[in-house]
Structure formats: C-alpha cells, structure tokens
Length: 140
Ligand code: ADP
Ligand code: MG
Image 1 (cartoon, rainbow, N blue to C red):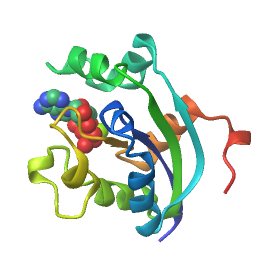
Image 2: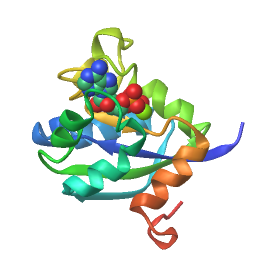
Image 3: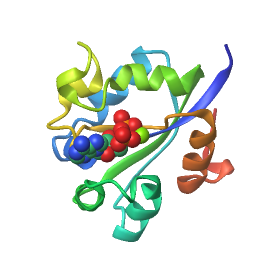
Image 4: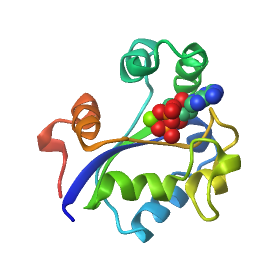
C-alpha cells in the first residue's frame, strides 16, 4: 500500500454543532494525519464548481444550498491508502446505511447533511486538493 492524500470536508451541519474536533479525532484514530486544514465559507459558485460532477442530479441545488449554509473545514488527510481509508472512517453516504462507529453513523443528520465529504478516487483527490490548497500549504 502507498501513502496517499485525500481531500476531506467537514460539512456545515457538523461545524454548526461544533463537531470538528470529534470528527478529526476519528480521522486520527483511524490512522490518518491532518496535513492541511482551513475553515472557510464557500460561495455558491465555489460549491457549484466543487460538485460539478453532480450537476445533473436532482439534489444538486439543495446540496449547494446546504454546503453554503455555514462554515466548512477543508482539509488534506494523509496516510496509508488514505482515499479508501477515509471513506471507511466516514461510512456510507446515507447514515441509515453507515456502519457503527463511522463519522456519518455517529453524526450525520440526513443523507444530505451527512457531516463529511471525502474524495472517491486518487485522481479526484488530486483535483479536489488542488481546488482548495496550494502545495506550500500542505505540510506532511
Ligand atoms: P459521497 O459524499 O458519499 O461520495 P455522493 O458523491 O454520491 O456521496 O454525493 C455527494 C453528496 O451529495 C453526499 O455526500 C450528500 O451530501 C449529497 N447527496 C447524495 N445523495 C443524496 C440524495 N439522495 N439526496 C440528497 N443529498 C444527497
Ligand atoms: Mg462523492
């Protein structure tokens, strides 16, 4: 296995409930290292650009409204097999289907307000990391 980096976002439902530290603790306990992190307010244009791959899906407008409803914490996670590992720690998109102990099982409010985003492939991780971070901002 290789050391990878993946893009994670702690979503507005979680920042609103002050859960950043609790979610970060799960990433760290799961073997991932937070090598870059920034709390930001996404604009509508930024949310639409980030989720452009989902623009044809019926929930796109609602998702972009949700993602701009409050601050998010964008972060780069590093570790062995980080893309897949992060998705294991997050759990399934729908919290009703997420495994016990996962971020989404513990914290998600709904399939939309599901507390965390994680890149779904190494190629997308590279694109998504570059969307938010310059190389100089990532300290491994
Ligand atoms: P994941 O975040 O697990 O990779 P997707 O990439 O399929 O899931 O979807 C992106 C985000 O869109 C989800 O995390 C969730 O916030 C939202 N979403 C996905 N499916 C639905 C749905 N059926 N209804 C509302 N929002 C959804
Ligand atoms: Mg996805």
